[in-house]
Length: 128
Ligand SMILES: [Zn+2]
Image (cartoon, rainbow, N blue to C red; front, side):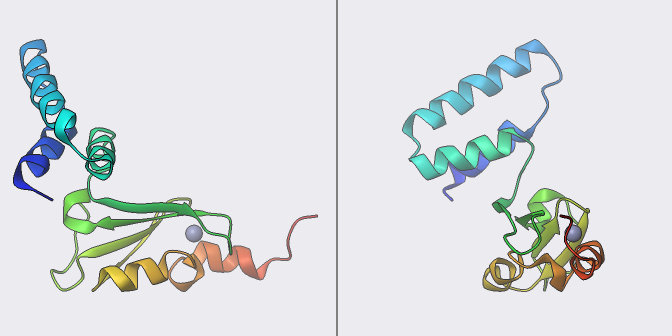
């Protein structure tokens, strides 16, 4: 991500202290947004929604729960520098941090790998 876009994403995630700051933020983000590609615009929208570091969010076909992959540090999730990616079962609030983006994307579709509640729900017979 280019530096300007990164700065805009950080600004979009900030809560302004007053109306003057809010207008400065909006003007800055609007100027960047205007020249951003569709994927860069998506990154800005995610940042503005308080979802900094979100790489992917999807419903698990296996469990029906929602999982997300974040850059842990950007999302404010404490993790060892060796494990910079956080996979989150958003339904149960379970988090596991992994070393690579690939691992994170492989883990997310099956939260039974790290979420006890998803594992327990899977062990129960499905509701009719
Ligand atoms: Zn779960």
